Amino acid sequence: MKEVKKAVAEKKEEVKVEKEVKAAAKKTVAKAAEKKTAAAAKKAVAKTAEKKAEKEVKAVEKKAEKEVKAAVAATAVKAAEKKVEKEVKTAAKKAVAKTAEKKVEKEVKAAAKKAVAKTAEKKVEKEVKAAVKKTVAKKAATKKAADEVISLQYLGKDIKIEDLKAAVKKIWTGELKKKAADLETMNLYLKPEDNACYYVLNESFTGKIDL
Picture 1: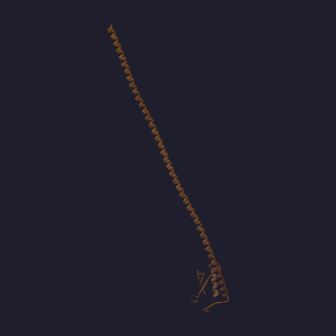
Picture 2: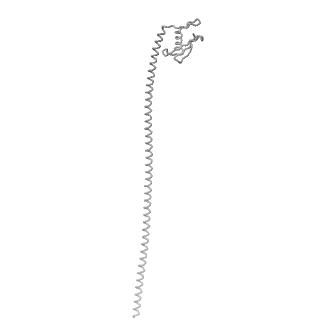
Picture 3: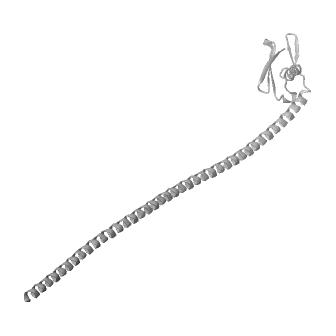
């Protein structure tokens, strides 16, 4: 009887130990599984964090790229604006210089015209005075000559100077088609050996008539 009880007790003890071992084994397995789960969870979290960080890095890179492009564009626009401003200023300076040049040229031309007009006026005045003097002298000479009769007697000919003058004046108004008032000077050269009277009118027109 004692042996039976002892065997039962031993059996119970074995069952108890077995239960404890199983329980301990379960705890160990559970703990191991918990550690594995925790490690997996950590890995998942790390991977998620890594993806998130990568995404954020890409976003930052894109933003930085946009900002750089915007800055480059702004710099280019500013440079273009400066260039345009410089060109506009240069063009404005040229326009002002050209306007000033035209103004100066206009003023110079006006001054030149005035000077020419004044010079011409003085010249005309001088010529008028000279013409008046010549006319007066001519009239005086004509008046004085009216009382004189100059003749050239040669080879039976009686040649009067007044007749030669009249003939030359006729050539002036007839052949040369000039106005009598425009005849200012008349120089006569008698050359009996050539049977000719050579004349020079207004210091430029020359010719001869027969005696």
